[in-house]
Image (tube, rainbow, N blue to C red):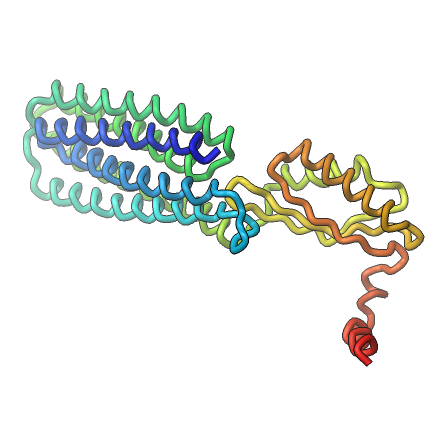
Amino acid sequence: MKQSVRKYVYVSLAASLLGLGLKVAAWLLTDSVGLFSDAAETVVNLSAALMALWAVSVAFTPPDKRHPFGHGKAEYFSSGMEGVLVLVASVGIAWAGVARFLDPRPLSSLGLGLGAALTAAAINWGAAKVMLRAAREYDSITLEADAKHLLTDVWTSGGIVAGLTIQHFLPPAFTILDPLMALAMAVNIAFTGAGLLKRSVGGLMDRSLPEEEVDALTEAVNRVAPDASAIHALRTRKSGNRRFAEFHLLLPGSTSVKEAHDVTLRMQECVAEELPRMSLLIHVEPLEEQDGERHGDPNRARKGCREDGD
């Protein structure tokens, strides 16, 4: 699977390299600070694609002795770093926009420059669509973050091209539109970076699964649960494209070990059909011992251990 995912990161790398060349050419032809900001964002795209290559190389490595839960959290580091880079880029773009606002300049060769920018946007759009499909297929936050960043680049490029086209037909006094578009782009990029950071922090902090996935899990469990049973203490989390869940299953005390094993096995199989990448851990308890009764004496477990050791 790792090789399959990596090929989509190469798509992002190729798009970023082509886009960077075209956008730098557009900036040099026009001397537009808006197109400069567009090129600066593409540098971030390229850096993000390189980090994504590292992330998927690590995240899709099978679990090993030192990492029995897998390496999926590497993806959160990648998307978090991408968020930081995006925020840094937004500050740089805003700085350039303010400088040009204070010192406006006429633009040149807009036709060629805008053509190059539109070509770069088309390349990024195609790459982003391919990567979004792959992100859904492999449930990869790295591919999704990279694809959404490319799409953000497309919309900002389109906005800048539209704005500069309008400016081309306006009097020279309207050169102020160029830095204003750069500032608007900086704000838009900052929101994208903040969103990436928020999602990455949530993954690193073991945020529970989305409500719809928790509902699918409990529904699958209840379909095969015996009449005289109950579940509680459900906990879920996600690491990369893998999901982890655990809960306590209350069964009658007369249930044999084999019967309890068969029940939990059916539950795991049913959940696997609904959520294929789910690792489910079930702790069986006697139904007769309710939580309050079982934990009424906090020293009960410790007493038992001391008694066994005597």
